[in-house]
Length: 262
Image (cartoon, rainbow, N blue to C red; front, side):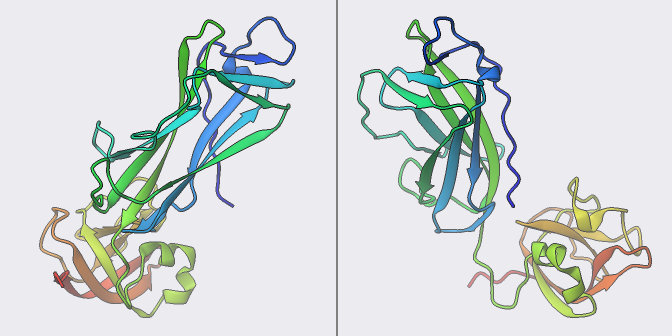
């Protein structure tokens, strides 16, 4: 089951329980989140985001909006400040006030699909991305309040025939231990990314063991050095999956080669 992480809303009230006269604080009334349907998507395939707003106020609730646009969605490439794509760009919305009524505990979901094209209609490159969903509420005075939630996802190059993703090993290590496997990714040096389950405990064989990372995880490699600590170019590593005495899983490499351009 996909784990949902709720955003705590730290803003003043812009919502009224039905029949109430005084506004209430949003962090006590509403939960807002965005969840990609898939955390890893291949280049060119649609990316679907599910937006959810939940009434946790304890009473029926009316959310108010200053126009027909109730939310917006923006996509950023990791490390960039300018959005690559904005859902509302080029869309027309009514300028009249609108509202959304939710019973206590009710969840309203919105589905947004992105075709991986940027605001200029070009395919975005593979990499790590962040989606930001904005709930565009209006105060009783008509002032707009933005409540934001975000989540991360990855766009990867299509898997080549016979090449595993590292997440395949993470999900079912017993299937691959002792077998010849082929992995594709980048040499990120001697230090794994934080919270990599296959890299917990440090280098499994020698201090020269290095880390291979793809779009789904990372793993220690021993036996053959790829020749660079810089994550360029992309490489293919062939070897046998082993389990260390302490239980750590690693790749005993036999051959490392750059990814062909074809």
